[in-house]
Image (tube, rainbow, N blue to C red; front, side, top):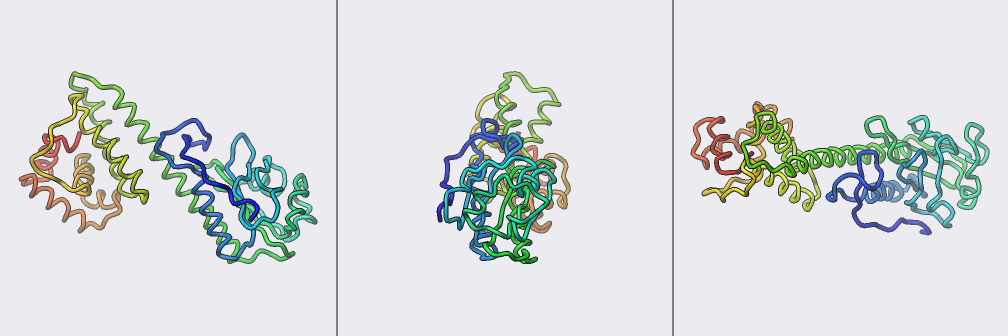
Length: 305
């Protein structure tokens, strides 16, 4: 393959998808984009698959699978131009059976397309909270109508990527809040509003961390959550005389916000009976007889903020 974009190191990106913002914990979004395009190309619905991230009103096609030349690699497609530019402008999938003869698109990029002998092409925008963050393309070297199976596979890849980017954005947002709180280390007891905000951020971090597949990122997020639990006096708390599992702490963090078992189950993607089991075990280890007492003892042991 002439263009199967190589991996970059982790970069800092914000929710707008641009480099330079966000947290150092965020993986490179190009890796997720590349993985989805690879899945599309290996399913054989589209012999050629390519795409790129959106920045400043254009898409730079950095990831290519099944191409024979280097003409598409790093091609910049502007909004409203060509097939992908229209998908970017209108925010919906757009396809053609014969790219060269299509009348409803501009032909600014006919050179690279003809060099690859592409005919049937489908472009799918990846939208997160109303903003287009990337465009995925699937292409066939024959004049055919893209079938439902092929179309669905590319649209599904776009939805998976959108969901992944949305999770990463939320992680960035929560970690940014946590870092802001951590940077404000007050020797005095924080006021009630600040303390409740700290506890809310801690709870959300635990909930998000527990849903992550990346073990390294999950571990780092739990480390940040632990730092938040130590912020009440500005110093790291003493180790507790007992141990709670990570999931038991996650459950107590939600209970501390006043969540019911059903709400805890929904936030942590657990079965209600599983939540009850974790809560019972945590209460037993803490020597607590009620949910409230368990939270108080967990805070005294520096397990919760």
